[in-house]
Structure formats: structure tokens, C-alpha cells
Image (cartoon, rainbow, N blue to C red):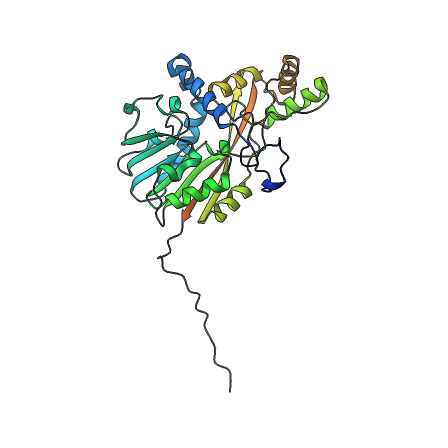
Amino acid sequence: MLPLRFARRPGRGLASLAPNSVNPYNVFDKSVKRLQKDRAALKNNGETSRTVDYLRDEIADRLLERFEDIKRKFPKVVDVGSGAGHFTRLLQPETVGSVLMLESSEKLLHRDSENAFNVPVQRIHADEEDLLQVVEPNSMDAAVSCLSLQWINDLPGMFVQINRALKPDAPFLGAMFGGETLFELRTALQLAQVDREGGIAPHISPLTDTRDVSNLLGRAGFHLLTVDLDEIQVSYPSMWELMDDLRDMGEGNAVSGRRSFVHRDTLTAASAIYKEMHGNEDGTVPATFQVVFFIGWKQDPNAPKHVDKKSTIPNAL
């Protein structure tokens, strides 16, 4: 699932970049990522993609629990990076009027029929980072994003756009992968590369941690922040099945300037190391997915401000 690469945002200084260096806000090759998702959605007419929905479906369930804790009706919701609609299909007309599903992969966006959803949906094929080109400012009653933010190049700018798209006093709920995701695979690949190739070329990108998410949401104008971590562990027969599932989820490596292949000998060694270091007693291997869940609220400028009235004691005569 996770990209065999997430990215922590490099520094800003664009003017100082070398001519052939990667723009710090173009960490991922979005055309490659769209192609990966499209291919995954089309494989066996979408059936292969559906068999690996287990992780997204589980995390969508957990995000829905947080969404339903907010006791209000949401006439219009935007699902940023909706994929095939793992979160949207869980929504009910008692709490949601309609959903705008925004997804960069057209094939994945239209993988499932209208019958999969309980509320009216509008599916828009567009880059998530172009949100305000398809959504009017101050028009949405809530925003959600379930497992898409790890592929956003300009995450600070993405949060700002979501804030602008929301009405005052509207919530933004999301789930994204945390820094310990796939640590077993990361360590196995690194040790195998050192042993077989004499160095390390990263195959799983650095992940955003809880403090990063809180800071970026605050800078984007959200308040009343709640951020918490969940951990999901999935067992696989071996490292090979894990990597197959990641590919079928459309979550292959799409980092700009990425290395195009890994030597088979290195992968074979990594598989052996994975089982030796992390293997379960039954012969399977675990894969850990750490998920950062968050809720932030757009401030309402017309909301009454709390004034701390301190009592005063007259000076003694």
C-alpha cells in the first residue's frame, strides 16, 4: 500500500536549486501515480483492485467513527483524493446530503457504479492539488481525505486550499500514514542493499509524523485540532505478497527521479532478512501501517470570543 515512498517536504529555497534538481514541491511524479492507479483499477476489470481494498476499507471505517461523532447534518461534503470511494460509500443520507468526489485517477474514480453509494455523488477527475479550480471557496460543509495525502506534493498548500473551500465552522477530517508505516519492509530492504550493493537507495519515503500534521493544520488556519494514531498490522505469507498487494493498490513508487528497478538478488536477500528479523511463529511476516487521524475546524470569524474576566480586589485602605 504505501507508496514504496512517502515524502517529507524539503526546504523552500527554489532560487538556490541546481538546474537538474527536483523542485521541492514536485517530490512525486503525478503522471506516474495516475498511471499506476489507472492500471490497478483496470486489472481484471477492477476485480484485482477490489481484492486489495481491505486496508483502505478498514481505515475508512475508523475515519467514519470520528465523522459520526460530529452530531450535525452536512449538506455538501468534498472527499479529497477519494479513490474508488472507500469512505464515501459508508456515508448515509441521515447525515450527508451529497458528496463531491475528487480524484486524479479517472479509472479508479469510476471503478464502481453509482449503486455502490447511499448518497448522491458527483465524481470529478482532477488533480487534488487543483481543488479550488473545481470547488468554490466557502462552499463545503465538511471535507474528508482518506489515504491520499501521502501523494500530495505541496501539503501545506493543500491544507490551505481545503480551509478556503470550507464554510466557516466546518470540519476537515483525514487519515494518512505515519512514520512507522512499513518499517519492517524498510529495514529489510536497507540491510539487503548494504549487503548486496554496498549502499542504500531509499525505497520507502519518509512519512509525516503527528507533530508535522498538527503544525501544518495550524498554519493553514484550522483550530480545535485533534490528532491521534492507530496501528494496523497485516500478516502476509512473505514479503513478495506484500509487494504484490502494494502494486495492485496502485501504491508503487512515484517519486520524481526514482530508481527504476531493484536487483532481484537484493529483493531475495531482503525477503530472507524480513522473515528472519520480523517473521511470525506461523511462518508469515507482519506489515505495520501506522495511521495518523486528524480533525481540524475552520474558524468562524463571527463566533463569539471568550473573554477571561479576572476578578479584581480593591486595594486595602
